[in-house]
Length: 423
Ligand code: NAD
Image 1 (spheres, rainbow, N blue to C red):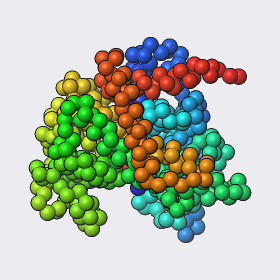
Image 2: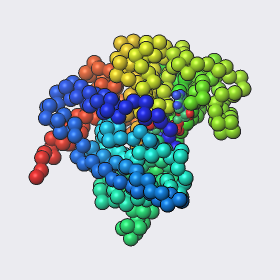
Image 3: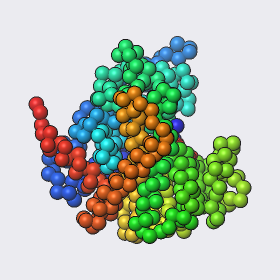
């Protein structure tokens, strides 16, 4: 499951930041302001009540959301998160980011996001299943394989996706695996999906090194967050010969100038629940990790960690954003002023949704592809998307973050303009 402290940034602030970035992109790309006005408001917002009766007969009514931002480029696509602070602004901001993330890697999808305000850590598995099935039932009229395809996000996983598939399928009277992605592999999930986001971070980091003339072999890398994204990014980068010199989790950070044996580190984390205490590692401060003298910094934990103050001390030459929104607006400005090469989140972590797209295709065609095929196709898509963004950045003499937004907002805007308004 993903862990993110989405409550760190309030939903309202998050939405304002996303809208500011979209507005800036429309201005840079000379997109008419009425298109911005159109994209500012999601196409459809569904708010549902989810009453659940616990073992003692007490009923708790949870609130669930599904925000469908835009579908000009294809069916809506986006995860579902279970987190106490989920609110409409946060889900809306995330739905908008999905529209632009899918456009950034040229997937034939629009953007959506869903969420239920609940604390899964305090719920039994049975209660999580009840919430999932009731939520799916309540949104079943607005989702579907050609309409809106949910996926996992913070604190939802393959099992939750299987419950969504089963509930929807029972309502339709037939198996519909293509209604949701991120399912267990034995229930139509995609080989390689688990490692896809970290692999995509590795591919875009490798490409960024190429652009800057930094050999990947021997490149020193610090990774904040050693969960799904951080672990697989570390594994794949280590396979290319990079040195993972620092990693952290919610309990603390460790450093070894010669680099860690990543496989042993993963085993240590699995056994002890933390990276701390790994042999031959020195414990360092959480902020120190972000400011180490390394070639690449990969924030792969939570949002808002690279603030103005932290960014001012970042020494890495490349920041590859594995997490969603790890850099604040002011932090971003500082990184740009310092000439640090940023691989922005909607590009760096798009490997997950791209593998989801492959899962959807396989389900529609009742096929099952091997891992190698999935990773090869993923690599091709990520490299193409990376090169498109670099080209836009060079042509317009803007930073990578502006470039990815200009590119993706322009793609969505063109589709919106071409389709026009009907009825
Ligand atoms: P995860 O729960 O598997 O891992 C998160 C890791 O971050 C854990 O190791 C946790 O201990 C650590 N962490 C939490 N707070 C920390 C802190 N203050 N300092 C250092 N480490 C801390 O989650 P994940 O799936 O790896 O997701 C990480 C980020 O990547 C999130 O922002 C998520 O939205 C984003 N993301 C994930 C995917 C995906 O496919 N998993 C796709 C796109 C974006």
